[in-house]
Image (cartoon, rainbow, N blue to C red; front, side, top):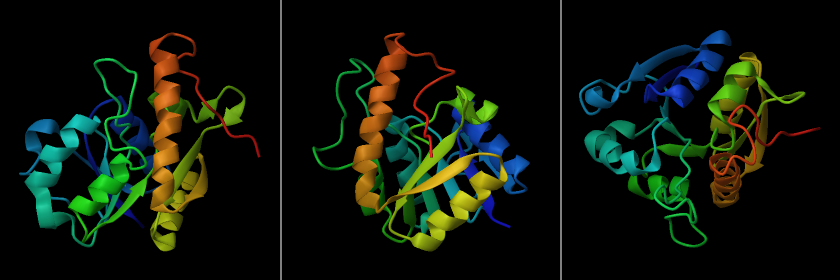
Length: 192
């Protein structure tokens, strides 16, 4: 059984944790005021925080990430204007995180989902699907199995380089929701 430590206690953290626990995984949480103090007990650490919080988390834990699978759910967009991503062109938040913690295996996942669609396990009439990018096939397969056990779909979206495209999808979905063109209970779905 895969064990998960989720850094964050907001709606995304709780929705992801609920899915994983429903599927039989062990899930623990680290709140904002526990960062750097609470241990990273899980085999998989999920960064369920806004992108601006990532730097301080990486600094607080440093080499404690070594040997862990780290799942980045962030969308690195400019939260003041909602008109651009704040990572270099062609890069991604996940790639920047991987460069900062080279002893970990970083995956990009959950950034194209809203909390409500994770909790309900549906987007409209479709099963909520988590897109997973990363360079480790076994890590992606383990995350996909845990997500599927919790009632969601999962698709291997390719290498960590594909995080760039996943973040673009997340950016588009968030800007549509903020401008009230789609609801926070909807979003993009995958039909197979």
